Length: 252
Image (tube, rainbow, N blue to C red; front, side):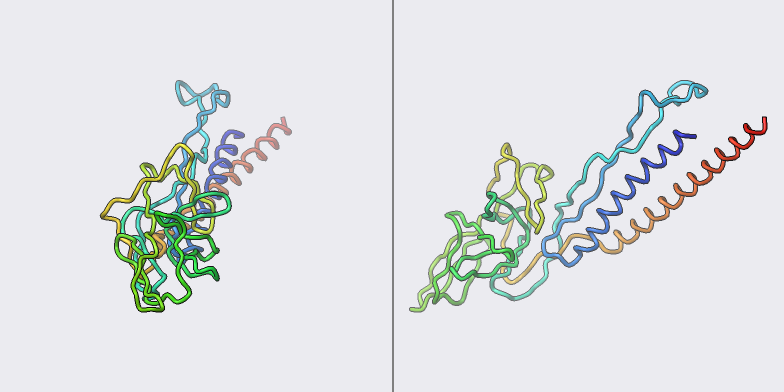
């Protein structure tokens, strides 16, 4: 009976973890560039927990182990905003961002200008170009961003000039990226960013929405809730069997 309770408890802990991940996905349905997460579980066979009445391999007791959290880097739908500093990435890749903790990467392209004329994220981190942070002159107007990431603007004299080129990068294995919060990811020191393929385009006046599917996440939440309740009922019945067994033994 103890094994049944422990196995059920391990499954409940895993379901609770999965429910937290789904709740976070739903909470970020409207977060620009957000990438949904899922939980990967595996079976853990305890070599010491076993029941001698069971023959063969049935003696081993299997628990549920929370193995990892996986990020879904599939592209979300693009939404037109017509704002000149909103940029979406169409295709695999990330914007390179400069932070106090080093270089970070994001899919959220809702940029703006800081008082120094630098193109920055919502949190004030400079957006990197191929030659460093992208900076505009105080008199710049008519900002244009080409599909290859080239940024240009018209100055006070009416002359059009380049202000840099957005640094669009990709990774051989994005699954190794670590989420840092605020839509930022960091790469391990052993994995260098690569220049994005020409098929990856920068789309001015658009933003990439979250790739989370609301209906799918809600359905999964209902499934987890039902599974959690079923395990609770099983544990209650097991506890009732234990209680009755103790009462019977006490009568002997």
